[in-house]
Length: 388
Image 1 (spheres, helix red, strand yellow):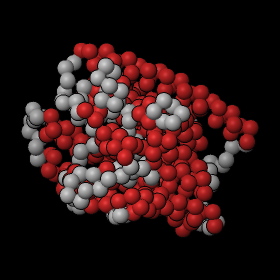
Image 2: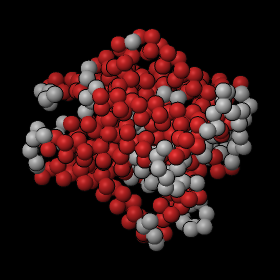
Image 3: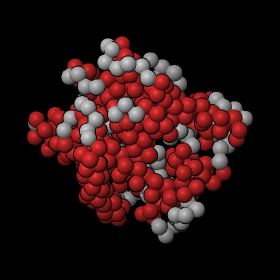
Image 4: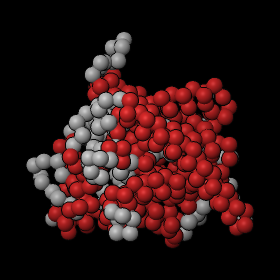
């Protein structure tokens, strides 16, 4: 598709922004209310650690958006990076989100309020660019379905928590949008910021570079110096390494501490085989074992979506991001958090949106299933249980 006329493009941008705001209000506010009610109906699912109680003991609901990895981001906000080569350390976590929270906290009432504002505003921006890219490459019906499915995806509560998912979602979607508009420098800048947000920036760079190489090879595009702007994405990783070099003295510290999260190099099918070996005619009773199987099924499902996108001739960067975004965590020999990783693989929601338009029963099933698990995981997360 060619670039729309400027006036038409502005109108589309305003329309999709208003739609993004409306969808966010409808689905996020509903989630916040349901989680508030659920918090009072269910007992705690785990021990609430002191570092998660950032608003004090009398604000259990708002503290519910600070769990697990939020504690590490809190440490970075308050103390910068610390590195202990013999124990888990904050150097495993990327810097953009915690530092934005710190800097904006000066004007937004503190870094933890600022972090929640960043996550939720970024989610609105991410939905906006998901819609704009969907309108450009597909149509409004597919784009809107993709946005709704992303907002009700089982782990989508992370988009509103003190986590990096919302910020990465926005930056990655915007980066791909400008890539397909041929604005490679803007794409690289946004992609570089996404690389400063989480390691998922690596598959984003690989997907965009593969798409560009394919277009150049097929002579659909001619090389322009501006295309080198894509190198801004891996440059983001270099900036992170410089920060670590300055603060802890080791630019590779973020890789060395992965062992303390039980992550190691493995062939991508190894963690899947390990997980499915625990499958009996019924799911195991222990939460961690059952969740590992569900994470394995999630990985297989998104790999299947990626392959189907190739078969149906989706844009190269879209299917490559889906496949690369699943393969990267699989090669760490661990399925944990797979639900969060695939949440950020936004092109998969276009595929699901197209299928839902053609098959209304599938749409109803996915909305029901996604909403069920979203409610379950959201309340569990607030009540200090591991989710996603």
